[in-house]
Length: 258
Ligand code: CO8
Image (cartoon, rainbow, N blue to C red; front, side):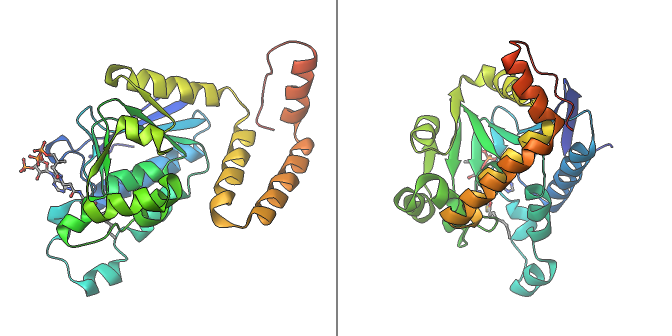
């Protein structure tokens, strides 16, 4: 499918989705978020894709929701359109693992989009922030909730109330990102991580994602019960037999997603 605000490449079972609105630092408008939802759904349904990477440019992952698109809207218009609600749901419904590869600005909705992914690898020039307060608004696609879970209340309050940016070193120290790499190595590192995931059983990877995400949604006791049940359930798969046989036979497993 041809997109106007995205560039999608598929290679070695990895879909690399680049946000592509360079004139607006990849600001997220309805078209871009709509196309991103479509691209993620297509990747989820494509058997040639086993892991997805979302990235932007070296200057900006995304500098937030498109302020030009929003500035004149009324509460009633935002309410009836459920502004970005459905787009957000489409992104978080993706079942295959999604890595955010962040260079440059990830601000407002850009930071929120990165946090909707399963983990974030960032470049050493990355800058994260929730500066919506400077515009007289609050984060609107998960920032107050997700950033708080990533970095804790104190730092999240600091970011949301002062609107300051967090650099890559602080983001790694605070647990917002899993790794920091030189900007020139960002895409090779993120796609290598994606290819590593693509070598696993896709079925197992999707279940792992469900289990980790469950920790956000439920109590510890229920989450552990969920984990144990799916651990038991995976013994019904051919990939469990293959993975364990391969270990015992000292060879590489050949997973078939069954
Ligand atoms: N929206 C629209 N256009 C933008 C945005 C944006 N968020 N960010 C940058 N641009 C545009 C600029 O207007 C400029 O366009 P033009 O050349 O036509 O004037 C171009 O991108 C380049 O930007 P700058 O000249 O400003 O570049 P600088 O390098 O000087 O500065 C910054 C880079 C610091 C990133 C600066 O552009 C900036 O502060 N941008 C806005 C950051 C921001 O406030 N983001 C939060 C937006 S609100 C939000 O994300 C809410 C999310 C929830 C919405 C969900 C609704 C339910």
